[in-house]
Length: 237
Image 1 (cartoon, rainbow, N blue to C red):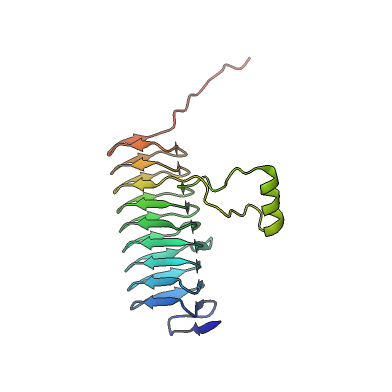
Image 2 (cartoon, rainbow, N blue to C red):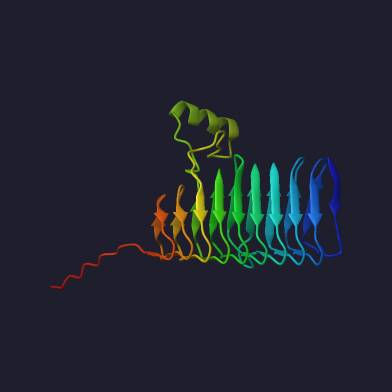
């Protein structure tokens, strides 16, 4: 049952904002929302601060909370940004720019990004436990930050039963996979195509090079991490 389809003056055509019975929404001043779809289901909550712009974004808050703080820019002009909270929380700090591909939170996970942090297009954050990203960070294009294995390795019989029950939604997980929190400090630069996996801890001022994978490692502050590439040059006959 729907309380109302919210149609404030700042909601133009192609924008849909629905708050269901038992859900809540708090919208600040001078907010712009366009070409977007926002749905908040019973028991869930969304808070949008002052002077926020949301564009070409789909926000789904099923169980939990989404907070977008003052002066933040959320959306991607070319590829639609998805903020999916199946169960858990997303907190975006003030003066942030989030133009990623997707933030996906399940199993009570909590994503917290600090202030003046930029997440560029194609990047994906998947959280089933905890991902904390500090302030003044530059996160480049196509960066993956996953605190989870995303899938359980199940016996064949059990996996087949889940596939049949939830068809056509293949890969459905009914229990939380293996997880470990990720912590990224302040003033970091994550290069294009880099991947930060579960259990990783990056100090302040860390630079992660192009296509580098951090496999649950602890990286000290003010260091640079790059992939060791060995070139082999052969003479042509």
